[in-house]
Image 1 (cartoon, rainbow, N blue to C red):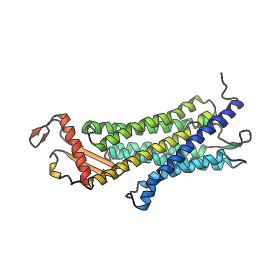
Image 2: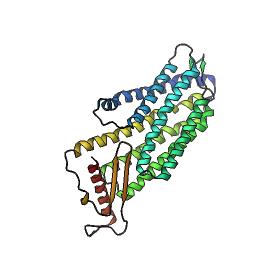
Image 3: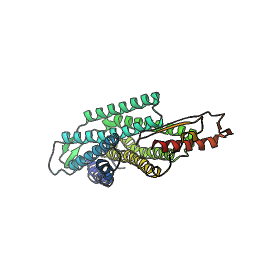
Image 4: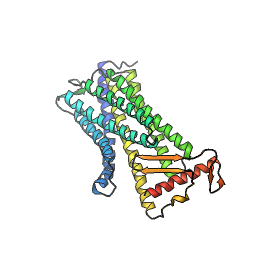
Length: 328
């Protein structure tokens, strides 16, 4: 049986496994950043509408990019460096990207739940708890130069177990809130309109990515094989979460841009075409999409015609689409 604690195995895990794996994931993010920078550049040039949430989007990407660059410098340093300073800077920039990514998700939660005060309170408390855990991790980090490995190392990585586990739990809570909100929306409207389908699909994708990206760090920090394996999936999970959050923001923004192009050639929907007992309002801002639908569940009449529940869901979906058209 392999003794992961032995110096020889630990050295091999660091130089062969950890370094190579992280270099690959760093390359993936740099490629992602460069290939999608056109979105931000279009906003700068005025080709896309400016919205203040672009700053959160850009901060997410910039923080992660700086962390990637610092990591590459630390890994490839040819002479001893001040590991404590450089590792702290790398960790701070990476956590800034992670916190900003979670802000994008919080905005989405607030929008899906139509600014429900209870949900806003719970979400804010979870987010602040996550920030507190992150600050604790930054304060407690220690790094030193290892002459044998010729690189900076972080000893006693198992001490970071509470931070990793609590971060995972907080993200799971946010995901559950998103999915519950989408399930309620799906039940009320049937997700028969494109915006609803987009939000639903993104919620499922986000759940899958979060599980795949954040579960391995938790598993390996609990197993505590050695410091290299404890760190193996932590930074790649940050990269995965950053890409997922910014991609969802980007695709939702593209959805609105395409809708604007299409609807600008169409005729506006008249308000009196809607069922009298249905009210739908959509505030079309990226991430901040508020949907508020109120209707009677049992005695529904539209133009003196009795509708069954399924027909009503179709009416609600059409009404939401009409509201979207009117907003543009």
